[in-house]
Each structure stands twice: as C-alpha cells, then as structure tokens.
Amino acid sequence: MLIVTTETIVGKEILEVKGLVRGSTIRSKHLGNDIAAAFKNLAGGELNSYNDMLTEARQIAIGRMVEDAEAKGANAIIGMRLMSSSVMSGAAEMVAYGTAVVIND
Image (cartoon, rainbow, N blue to C red; front, side, top):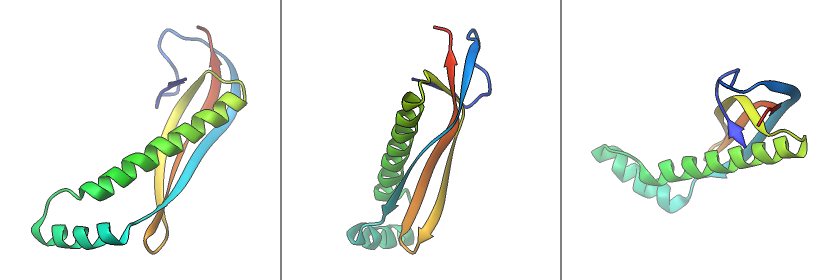
C-alpha cells in the first residue's frame, strides 16, 4: 500500500477515489513510566517510554487505516494525516486518516 501526504502521486494516475479511510487507537500511560517520566522531567531530556508509546500508537493507527483502505479495494492512500488528542487523564487517541484511491501500477 502506497501512502503519501500529498494529494497526487508523481508518475501515477488516480483511476478511482474510494473515499475516506481511517484507523485509530487509544493508548494509556503506564504508572511506572509516569514515575520515571516525572524524574526525567526534572533533569530534562527525551521521555523514551512516551516516545515508544506514541511510535507504537502511530503504527497501529496507520495499520488500521491500511486495513480500511484494502477493504474498500484501494491500493494507495493520498493526503494521509495523523492527529492525536487527549481522551481522558492519562489516555490519548492517535488517528490516521486519508483518502483511499486506486492508482495505475
């Protein structure tokens, strides 16, 4: 599955637009990670556990978006975007969305 953030794909013709596709996941923080992050916040630096959690959330959301596109018969996704939002204290949603299309091979 070809995924791009642009509205067109250089060298490819969009033969059919299948419509909006999306994938999402809601992830919660781990208490142990919260404690470690609090100490890290005092000293400064990257919060690796949160970075790992967000990387995993992006991969899951994109994977689910691809499954949605495949179910609609698409072979590419254009205009892909990622969005995150806080759902409740300690939990966040990651959403991947775009337009499913059929392109020439």
